[in-house]
Amino acid sequence: MPDPRWRRDPCAPLPGVPPRRPQETARPKQWVKNLLVFATVGSSGSTVLGDRDVVLRVLVTFGAYCLAASGTYFLNDTLDVQRDRNHPTKRYRPIAAGTIPTGVAYMIAICALSATVAVPSCG
Image (cartoon, rainbow, N blue to C red):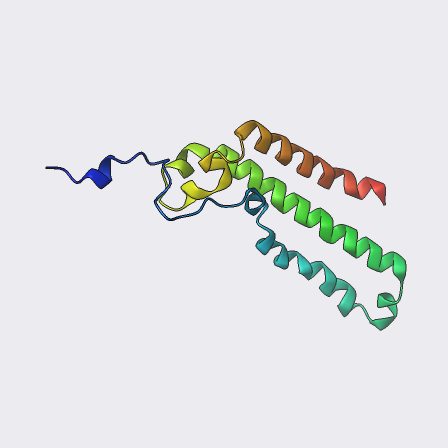
């Protein structure tokens, strides 16, 4: 007799495993890498750190990098949704699990990436 575990729907959650939160699709843990934009200001000298304009521009740049990264994650997870649904761990990601509909994920990706492109024109 075949093992019944192999007949389980690949999209069905495993017992005892909570679904992931929708904001995890933005992958805020990855934003730490974007802190490198502050290294440029720090390495340019202490007089630059006192310039409010420079600090504000670096903060805006950091935000733009975070938007670009998150928009790309939303887009990638939406494009890979079918493969992720068949993956043993990626199927719990919010888009693959159906917590975030693919249409909504596309809109979030478009808005985040558009905002990233618009940020340089504001300064």
